[in-house]
Amino acid sequence: MAETFTTNVPSRLDRLPFSRFHWLVVAALGVTWILDGLEVTLVGSLSPAIQAGLGLTGAQIGLSASAYILGAVLGALMFGRLTDTYGRRKLFTITVAVYLVATIATGFAWDFWSFLLFRFLTGAGIGGEYGAVNSAIQELIPARRRGYTDLAINGSFWVGAALGATGSLVVLNPEIVDQAWGWRLAFVIGGLLALIVIFIRRYIPESPRWLMTHGRPEEALAIVEAIEVRVARDTGQTLQHIDELKVLRLRHTRTSWLDIARSLMVRHPRRTVLGVVLMATQAFCYNAIFFTYALILTKFYDVAPAAIGWFMLPFALGNFMGPLLLGHLFDTAGRKVMISLTYGLAGALLCVTGWMFAQGVLSAVTQTVAWTVIFFFASAGASAAYLTVGESFPLETRAVTISLFYAFGTLLGGVGGPALFGALIDTGERGQIFLGYLLGGGLMLLAAEVELWLGVAAERMPLEEVAAPLSLVDDAP
Image (cartoon, rainbow, N blue to C red; front, side, top):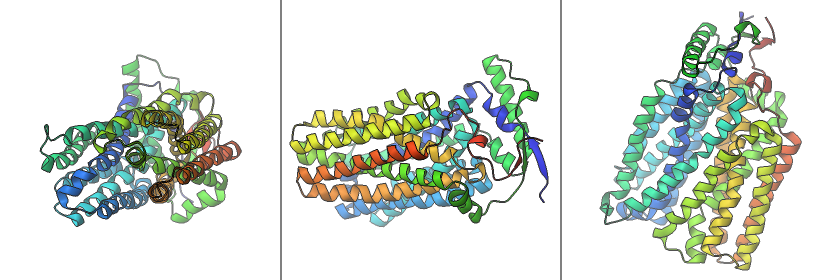
């Protein structure tokens, strides 16, 4: 039997007051979602310029979007497994470096195939970030603030979307930027921003919880002690006496794919069902609306393509403000109540808005207002879906579990939702599109019911109590 050891690392991390160190974690790691939002929105807004610059067809633009999604899925699966094996810090450095190189290379693409390859690699870097970054954030942020912090960070995707929408208005303006270079410059600048991210991440330590479950308790303890000194200095607070903190007994074990499968299907089958439902429904609803947003505005409300960015900004603002304003309630009122409420409200409002759209009573402005309100709630719920799949499974499988659910949701939402809504929009019939809205809203309502049935009350609880580590021997020395 493997040698056992005791540690109070989780208790020491969770008892820390929120400090400048935690803000550094939020800034350095949370920027991933801003980059993702920037990427997705930029490509959507710049597609006409890219199409003209490289001589691409509409189908080739669509294929490049699919390549990005495929890269994100495969990158999540590959890097997620490596994150659980080799550590959070190594992988969140590697993945952002992949993103940096691939995004800058996209700005120098010379034909369809080079553009396709670079978009695939960019997606792989972003997809790999999800497991590495989400796991590190959840393991470093104190339990009492984990929900709010995770939701706010996931919601920052829409800060990137707003930046992308605003940036497109600049680079697509021939009076400001030469149109032959505007779209290329946007990608190069996006890649260079990642250099700042890599620099800041140098100051983020390895997750002590990861070290603890990989048989390296001395290294974990040394990092925690350094964090404690820093937090005490920054806050001026005296930390709780160490003898009062809970101690775990662990042993170092290697985690196999069989262990991962057992964790999902045997130890936590109800949580697996919950995670699949939450991720799949929000991904379908989100991507179906988001990726056809411009088509609805141009085809049914005669909005000029160059003006789409102005309608994107309030939509992005609503999506960001939802997690920011509602996030603290996920730590106080609780996960089950808030997840079911936000999913349910978003689903019901989507059905009502779909009916109003079918009746032709909405304008471009009121349609945008309706979507902004819907996704104020949906964004908080969707962010909580990522939180749920991250905190509901053992430490040793956290990154790969996040990656598996992310990959599943991305495949379904990135392929099924936009494809269906695109086909419905092509019919030109509002009634057909209404059926799509009913489907999306109905799925969100279904997820609300499943959350009430299977939801996990993880608010303010240490990760090790929400899901016991696979390496746990006993609760006490």
